[in-house]
Length: 463
Ligand SMILES: Nc1ncnc2c1ncn2[C@@H]1O[C@H](COP(=O)(O)OP(=O)(O)OP(=O)(O)O)[C@@H](O)[C@H]1O
Ligand SMILES: [Mg+2]
Image (tube, rainbow, N blue to C red; front, side):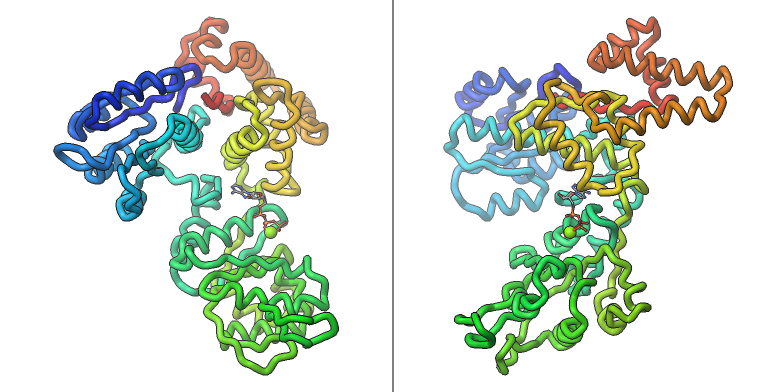
């Protein structure tokens, strides 16, 4: 964990000593800088010091930069390594990224470039190193591309995505609105060998009915009134890439038949045309309707359903994976701080408790909107329970009422009081654990144990 107040630690490995000195001067306001002139010395230092990031010259005496990179990753895969290359030879950069480098920068560069790169890397570190305290399992995976979440349910999805990405199998993603279906579709594309080719998304529900066919399959010039020019459809645009058919359940029945044929034959004709067009497209479809139900009601073709449902991926609603909420909240905090130029540092434990207990009918999208709005308007350095919209705050009084309603015995009531008192003290001390423990007159380890027992999981500040 990156503790608040402490500067992020950067190791710079470069054999140019004058350069090392200027790095020192330029970065020392924001970072604690360590330097080494050789790969060997750098690796030795990493065995002793816990650093967050490394800036690594590709060309070094002794073991070369790429090999140093490989060894750093063996030592601690969570260290983000930025390679410094002296020429624009992309091959080395590509090799470095393959070996696990986080990014690269080409010499010569401006100090601002390196500063912004390090700051960006730092944000990645904050997420990577799990800003939630009391959870130290940094080795387990909790992100895939832009998809955040480490619940067992999300990990199952990552596994599935990794396994199917490189096949051309059709995938059907389903789940409630706002759970992240499109994000999963994009992740499949990103992890496939088609990643450099187009990802084309069509929302079948958003296009007016008489235009859907020409949007998907294109039309020839003069096909209908207003068709003054030939128009290529999404299937053609997605050639060699992935076509994402969103809300596939709203497709007209006659177009379902045409879609079925494309999936089977990979060919079709543009509207008003007779020329057969062949395409190589991977299809990922999504729906928040229950297509099986629609098949039973005969509003969706069963043959098409089976063609689409080769690999089903169900994305569960947020309320079924509440353990992802703190991480997602943190992720959106970083995102909207950047977007709005704000510096909101985190959430109070109480605010976080409210977020994790709410039922989120709008799922991740609703969480994202709320955090975005709060970051934009908040006048505080941290988001507090009082900042939460009222319907969320009602969760809090609901919890208190629940306790009273259950007729808690003295032990439970005392625990509840203790919880509130600790939360309040933590708040007053800006979540500094040492300070809080001192004020409460207990040892810091005792405080940690209590937080654990009381299921208090505050987000630590971002610095
Ligand atoms: N696991 C996640 N990590 C990070 N961001 C997420 C995650 N899930 C969803 N989001 C964000 O929430 C928003 C909604 O996600 P997305 O558009 O993928 O949902 P959807 O299931 O396609 O919703 P709809 O059914 O309404 O189209 C997006 O801004 C997305 O970036
Ligand atoms: Mg969507």
